[in-house]
Length: 442
Image (cartoon, rainbow, N blue to C red; front, side):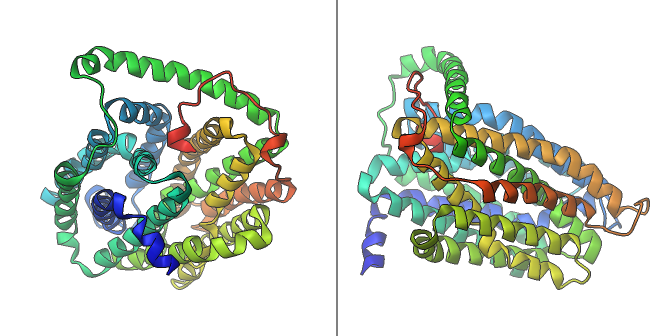
C-alpha cells in the first residue's frame, strides 16, 4: 500500500523521469566498452595504454576545476530562464561525443571524443541531477519531496543496472549506435511533453541580463563560500566531516579514474567483465539505498553507517589492489553494496549540524571540498598506475596505486571514528549572505 502511495507521488514527475532514465541508460551502457575502444585506438595491440590513463586523469582534473564554477551558474540560469531549456541543454551534450565514436573509432576521432566529452562533463555532470531536483521541488509538495528524491536516486541506480545489462549482451560494434539513438530520445521527449515550472523572464530581459547573471552568480558564489567557511570552521562536526569527505574522495575518485584500465591490463578484462562488476555495484546500490538505509539509520545513526561504509571502501580498495586472481575483483565489488552509503550518511550529518538557513552554504562547501579532492587525485594516480603497470615497475604489484589510495580512505576512517554528530542548534548561524546553492546542493 505504501509502495503504491509513494509511486503515485511520482505522477507529476513522469515526463521528467522517463527521458532521464533513458539518458542514464544510454550513458552507462558505454562505460564498459570505452576502455576497449580507447585502448585499441591509442595503443593498438597492447593491453596497457598509458595515453588513455593520462587522458582520463586530465579529463577528470579539468572537469573538476570548471564544474565548481559552472554548476551554480547553470542552477541560477535554470531559476531565471526555466528548468526545461536547461534540462534539454544538459542532456543533449553527450550526443555528439558518442556520435563520433559510433561513426569512427580511429585515433583522431578518439582524441576529438575526449575534448568534446570533457566539455560535455563540465556542462552536464552534476547539473542534470541538480536541475531535476529543483524541478521536482517545483511540482511536489514539501512533505512528499523525500519520497520523490528517493525514487529519483533509485531510478538512477536502476538505469545504471539496465545500461550495464545492455552493454553485457549487445555486440560492441552496435553499443554507441544504440546509445546515440537513446540519447536523442531525451531532449526530443522533453521538448514535446515536459511542462515548464518556472515563468521565464521576458526575452529582452534575458538578452540584457545574461552576462550580468553570470557575473552576479560568481560574485555571490564567492561571498557565499566565505560565509560557508566561517560556518564550517566554527563547528567541530563540520570541520571533521570536511576532512572525512576530502580524504575519502581523494582515494575513491583516484581509484575510479584508473580502475577499469588496471583490470584490463592485469587480468585482460573486457566489456563483459566490466559490465558484470558494474551491475553488481548497481544492484547493491538499489537494495542498500532504498531498502536497507531507511531501516538501519534509525537504529544505529549516521555515524555508525558512515564508519561502516568507509571501512567497506577500504576493504574494496585492498581487494582490488592485491587482486591475485580474476575472481578477486568480483569479491571486491561486493563491498559496493555497503560503501555507497557513504554519501547519504555524509549529507545527513551535514544537514543535522547546519541550521535551515545554512544548509546550502555548508553542503556547497563540502561539495567543493570533494571537487578539489577529485581534481587532485588523478594527478598522482595516473602516473603511478602507469608506472606499476609497466615493465619498469620497482616491484611486482600492479595495484600498488590503488593500495596507496586506500591509505587516504584510512585517514577518512580515522576522522569518522572521532566524529561527534551535533544538532543544528549547536551550529553557527551565518545569515549575512544569500545561499544561492540551496536549490542545487542541499
